[in-house]
Image (tube, rainbow, N blue to C red; front, side, top):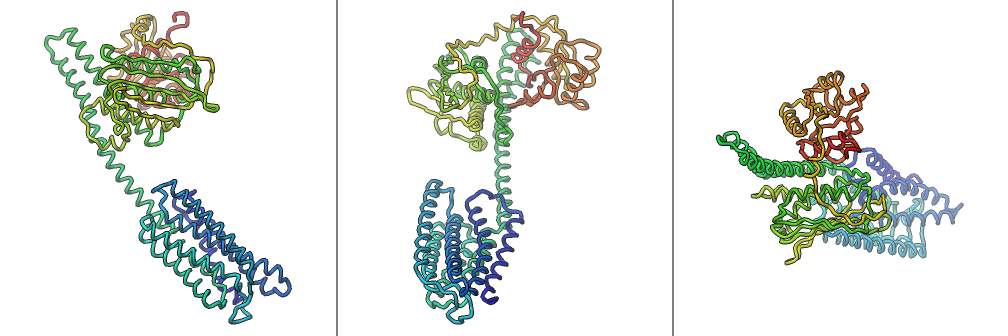
Length: 624
């Protein structure tokens, strides 16, 4: 009996070794793929089949005592052989086909193959059950072997499967690495050859089927499924991707340098002209200051768009959902866009469906960036006529699908330009700073839309203008209708309504230029201003003086802004402390509030944003 188990024990030993190595050794990061699942099934199944074959040999040795049980066990062994062979065929098909060519075709063909194999397995096994099975070698009756006519259908279907797999591999030969094709074809043909020889001889000398399975399996493990090869391939792929990424960054920096130099040239040029002007007048100062401000705004927008895309590409941009009023968001959008257009050339309108809800829960910061970037892109490419933002929506299940349609006339942008990716932008050359800056902003907007699971569509109809259609699902917080909105920017009317002459402010920053700028901006509000160069100086001043508000820089040597605000709060200082920071990104305000700050103000400081913060924290409700 031990000789009947010999090949089975050898095969089982190899199968157990492969199983241990496969599950204990570090594997390449391809978890979850169908190919991996198929091979994992084959690894575990083959070990179980080895133990089951030993049980069948023992059963055949005692066939006279339990003939019915022996036949059931042996016929189940045949079924398990058929199942392993069928899964092996599907596995070979999976590693041969390239799923990237046509995903739908691949899924369809895989389903057809699975159906055909299931039907073939059922027919083969039923046919096998109708035929006689023997339990002894035709050469030596003392040798225990499962054989007889019951195995004929198995040999036939296995041979047909090998032929089919070989045809598949030749048909899709470009999808498999060249160094892997030969061993795969070799092992398949070896299996077909052994089955064909046995089918011709009809002499069942040894239990070789399980051993052949182990031989095939071992071949796959050391070729296609070789984790060392896969890891090396992934390392090589990662190296090439890193090289490509580095080249792309180099090209991007090279190309974007022109966009940065253009506004910088304007800023430095007009600044130098003002310094050297001998007959300086108020008109000259205002004229050059307007040019410097416009160039600075363009440069800031470009830098912000670069940082936004960088955060998105690095995977650091997360969804920060919170409750917000749609009306407030649209007023902010209107305020920014109105300042970017000339009313003598373009008309800007916001139209809101009065029947949509008032308040939502979602990432309003990203929605704001999306609308601003797409609107700026539309405005830049519209030389005359109008730009409009139409806001509507409808319930889709439990969520509300907000729709934003941005329409404009005389648009020059083509669909090909709209579909450009960041890689296309990085590799391209540029001649106009403003246009390329807003193109990068549009790319950032499209990436942000993907993050919030929204959609954007672009339609350019000749003679009718262009439409950007944005749809984003939001959770409704207040179902009350928003009603008729009249949105108009009135910031210039707001800023002369309040006087801060009785308020004391402390500015803390280690950079002297930043201190001078903050003093210059705050001086327009007639405030009592005091400055400090570091956190320790700030703490000493607060201990001995009373301030109405503190503007505290985040990044400072020795004692940074976060550590300083912790000490102030622990000392019982509850006055508003505003973080001055260049780290302006989604969720930054919440992070600073958690550390003890009251609010934050992004650098570079904008006059409008500064005024809003002062009005928010220094003006009582009665005054408002």
